[in-house]
Amino acid sequence: MVSDAVAYHEQLAAGWSERYASGGMRRRAEFFRAQVLPRLDITGDWLDVGCGSGVFSRMIAEAGGRVLGLDGSPAMVEAARMASLDDALRFEVGRVEDVGALAGTYDGAICLSVIEYLPDPRRALAGIAGRLKPGGRLVISAPNRASTLRAAQRLIRPFAAVVGVKSLNYLDSSRHLWTRDELGELAGAAGLQVEAILGFDPVAPRPLWPAISPSLWFLVARKPL
Image 1 (tube, one colour):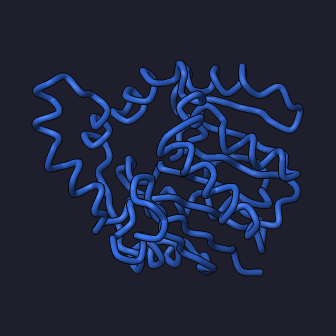
Image 2 (spheres, one colour; image 1 turned 135 degrees about the horizontal axis):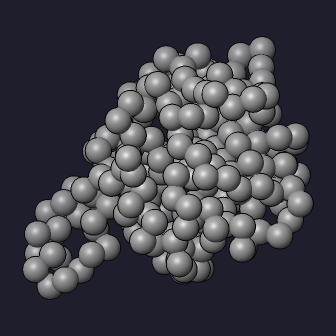
């Protein structure tokens, strides 16, 4: 069965990469490049679980990794293949829940804006952690339970629907939220050691981040040696 989240993203595959050229998505990609990538010491083989059109897979490859990107949306995988001609990149259709059954192990993995859509995030993270080599790092991004932006989006959602604005439809299938501590506990339950949890907001200027509750957490964790 195709999940609501996969069906939603299947419709967005055309032009998905182009969305990272401006606005909040561009700022998110820049934050990942500037604040997250330098923490990862990228070498060897990496997984991008829920890779979408491969925007972040390509960043990992540019930093020196070989990447297997998996996504449940065939249209997203096709978009990733068309945009990524580097031999270090490979994309396949695959569910997050199946990662634990993959052959081999990996030097690192990213799983960005994915676990909030899953029926069992704890099980999914355990599966990803099981494919990491000792010392391998995992990066997760996930929504903040206390996000000022999310609270505002939920308030205006009924009014946006009246005028035909569909950009907030992801809220229908994004089912989980975490505090900073809860996200750290989730990683710990998967046997990972938390190295950093960074807040990011795509709308508020960075100087205001200490005064608001950010939209997303980026967690960096390591599998113990």
